[in-house]
Figure 1 (tube, rainbow over the protein chains, first blue to last red):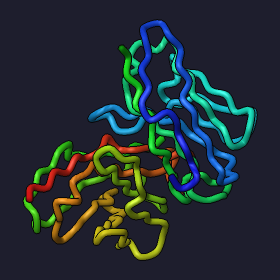
Figure 2 (figure 1 turned 135 degrees about the vertical axis):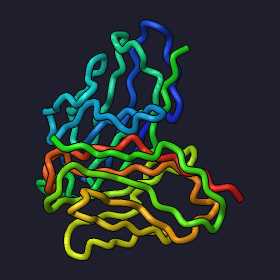
Figure 3 (figure 1 turned 30 degrees about the vertical axis):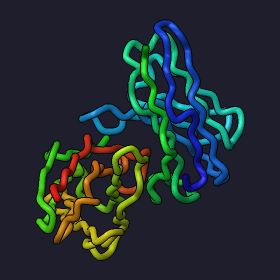
Length: 117
Length: 115
């Protein structure tokens, strides 16, 4: 998907379980983002990273964790502390290199649909 | 921080009808604005973008949008919709206006086109 890959496509989580969503990009971009999409609520920012080994909380970071050990990878862990994790999760990277990441818009991965069972 | 508002939650049209989806961005200065589309079961794709210059921008599949600074609006238009335009549409802009900060998104407008 334009150089950004999310896996798995579907994920089922049991109560109290942590799960990790994968996001990989081969665009050599510094910035990566995680959004959560719920019906009627648009996209809400969970975490973002502007550079390797650094990341920042977004608007709804509670119950989530991330790491950025490699430039190409930005995995998201949905922890047991996230009480309502059922949602569609989207990873994104800017559509071009540049200091101002919103100049180009974002390229999105195909998403992971997480369901609590 | 700025905000993006999409006032239409769900729009239902018949094929060949004209479309206009509203988007308001709370900053009236120079700004980068975007419309994304999400077809059923697919990821978000860029439909069109406005950076500067001509306020009327054209995107893929016959869509266009006009940035009206005085109204803080960036409405999406298409003269004649097709069944294949059934999708959810998201407007987006920078968190801090201009071109600064992460993108923020409106809540989306679901478009259903009846054949």
